[in-house]
Amino acid sequence: MRLFSLLFATALLCAQPPARVQTGYDSIQPARLKADLTFLSSDALEGRLSLQRGSEIAIQWIASEFAKAGLKPLMGDSYLQPVPLIEFSADRALTSLTLVRDGQSEVFHAPDATATFAHEATISGRVVFAGFGITAPELNYDDYAGIDARGKIVLIFNHEPQEAEPNSVFNGIGNTRYANNNYKVFNAERHGAIAVLSMPDPNHLGPDRTVSPTAGQATASQTQAAQRPRILSEALAEGGPKIPLFTLGRRVSDALFEATGKKAAEVETAVNAKPAPASFDVLGVSIELHTATSEQRRASSYNVVGLIEGSDPALKDETIVFSGHFDHEGTGPAGIYHGADDNGSGTVGVVALAHAFAANPVKPRRSLLFIVFAAEERGLLGSYYYVSHPLRPLATTGAQINFDMIGRNEAADPRVITEISPDTTNQLGLIGTHYSPDYRETVERQNKTVGLGITYKWDLDAYNGVLFRSDQYPFLLHDIPAVWWFTGFHPDYHQVTDTVEKINFEKMARIVKLAYLSGFEFADEQNLPRLEPKAKAR
Image (cartoon, rainbow, N blue to C red; front, side, top):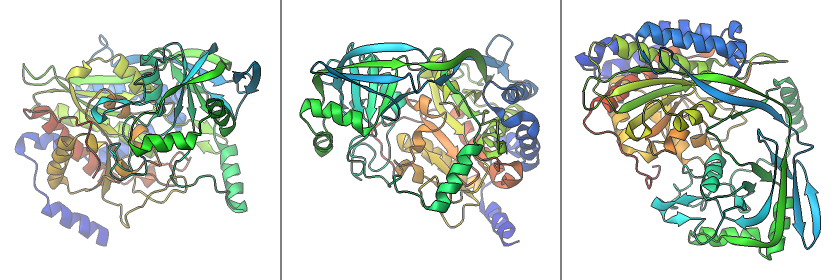
């Protein structure tokens, strides 16, 4: 009762939305969200695993809802953008790295050298060390300056420089968009590399995940692992990385640095001190890489995409994106991974926004694009495919609101290290607004109507790598103000217990309403939010 009274009092203090957006705003109701999510996370959809029956049902349901709302299809008369995929299993026994030095060769397999690459390949070449593998002109930093990576295998540290320095230009103790391995592989490709070797950051000061669990914890962990579904890897048939990434253990990385006469920790210390690159050719060493798969098939999933055209003849060519992903983890020995929060909640939220904007008599001046992506759980594959095959020009895409897990109250999860507010029943996390203060200001202004508690804590978190874990990230790599709307982790994350009865539908409705008001302003104001690559979280 006290919680209801608090929420009612908060609602009374909030401003009313303008009359011109009221119809769409009022259409967003908890009961409709609950009805839709009850279906989407039901047993009938079998956990919505990519390329399986349940995900196909989800695709058709989303498309039918876009049709009901009257959205314009962009693939002829279809709302479905095919996403060509390769489903495969890496053969760890046959995947190998051979290091050749002074006429002697040594062969490494997992766990010393691992790769998950969809293609069978044999690659050999010289090695060049390229620091953290980052090219960031706006930060005056380029690990590739002064070296030639063309036709070579690039060795890099994971993470990014000065990750423990609060005043670092690399977003202090948070992450920039450059710390992710996918970015680093794309960057190596642009510099002509033929493969990437990623080694541990030798001076990394993050929380220790190597501490041995207690006997009880170990038993619980082993039981949970045994109950996980067996899920094949997936990769884009086109639009993804074209060269393999090998992850190295200490044995291989130590051997490579021993050949150079340098110590990895000292090299990193020198980079962090300035920060400035310390890249070099690794002389006297060559590498042969072999990737192998034990099973493979090609198939297509689909991004579901629909458009509401803007009302202004000049501005309707510009686009605001609302997105989420529909896939989840399928079924396993433990049962069905229902994915009510992850990401049934985000899917239902995007559908609700499509209906709200369609129902509102007044349309904003810019066009609105609604996308529910395929295969996010397999590596953001649908969103990576979209940015390489956009249905609206990325150059005129002004902002993205991405929903992923917007239905729960954050709660302690042993897999995640973070501080949690005492009361998260009205809390929403925004991830990535440090790249666009304009975006943040718009949301905060519109939140005076809705009254959510907004946290930006994830922008100061490097340990959990949250910035890279949802479908806003590929858009951010293309200089688009792209923000993940997220209510936080909880113990049911990626468990069979992520079920619909645990969703906070009142809070979820407020989040969708805030996205509606914010998105309307993005689409209607004279100036779009700006991306500021040098901005840091605060």
